[in-house]
Image (cartoon, helix red, strand yellow):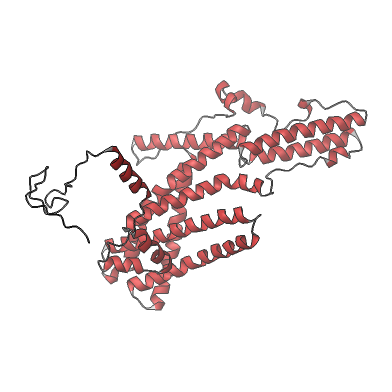
Length: 398
């Protein structure tokens, strides 16, 4: 039996109001003191960290499987048992982009671990060459292939080290084959990989040459109707973007990989704010197409928040399924194929879910709903491409 506690005669230590429960009805302060033994503090910390809000259980399944359900529940005033729309969208946005970022970072390593090397060299042409000229030609071809692989900037550090080892092994085998043919070994300088451009090297400063970056004077961005501070910011972004891209394309292997990672981190750091800006814009778009339904802007905003939360949840599940499929491929191919079908189902479910949500929330006939869904969809795709482009440019200029 639950024990009844009487608060008669107790007063709030903060405002002096008579207590009627564990919390003051005037200022909200708890009657319990924060000065507790250490073991109580540890218990509360563990409970806070491990506690899972029960509202998640009531929110995520209908968000994924019941189009428009959460939005209609929110409009009807039944909100306590569900996660608030903005908090739901915010958490799912961060989680989904974090997992996508993690998947991209692990992509190269996973391919290499699963028997799909990102680089490959073939020394058979060198070992079977019939003349010294054929040896030099075969070596040059393999070294050019290694340089092209490095220039992509997609190789992780461990694969870059393997490329360096492969290059030394190719040169060793070429020298061995030349010795068998009675020819002199090839000096390292005679078979050059990515020979430096003398004009660019002359224009580079000593500091730039050390870091593998060639700097050029960047023009100043000047837009007449913008203030000087905004033009200065745009100029700095343009200079950073050109430096990152130039280092990525023309720098050495280490500098190129660093520039690539810097741009990727910048892009994923810019994507969440870009999506947060896109949500109210999409709500305004809904208000424009449903202006005669006499809905408040806040109602359109709730629809937009729940819709984007659903998209981020699908992106999160799609990424998790892809990562799990890659991990299971060498161990259980059938499970990997099943996850592939799940990813396809998620992609097909997205437009169906959004269409049903629009039909159930705004309650128009199917012909008008389909027409507006088509128009809103294309407008949103344009907005999304624009937002992703801006996020990419700002991130690449990080």
